Image 1 (cartoon, rainbow, N blue to C red):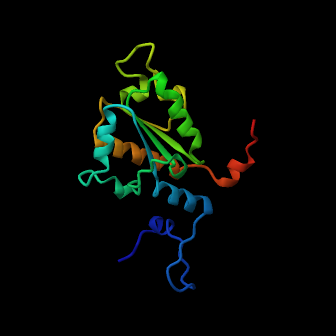
Image 2 (tube, rainbow, N blue to C red):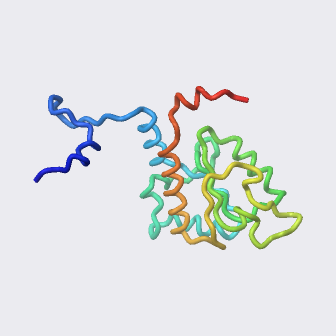
Length: 175
């Protein structure tokens, strides 16, 4: 059984070296580790938080993606999942928690309220968490199902896997 030449190009193998050896770039290995060990900081503010809790249950099993360790301390988390209506009264607390999270960090806006204010067009509701902190993945729905959160987590993993190298990040001038 022979392997086509195109598939052989995807493998890095040298017959002179015994054992299993994988060649890769350091930044690709770091991104692989980051994407498979996300520690969410649940910021449950309304009804979407119930669906967020359901995602951690055995039926939906978010642990398949390495994200089962919900951290309620921002210093131990790297993904903030904002789920629910963000009022101006809570906005400063959400921003404070976000600022305490170490770099690199990512944000998922879960639900219509966190993404755009939802049905609440009032003076007390923030019209999207992206006005306060940068959002990497938006999940639609009111409330979104746990499967939608899992899909959003997979989209975040794809984004993390494609991040640029560490050297390129250091080379960029800071304004």
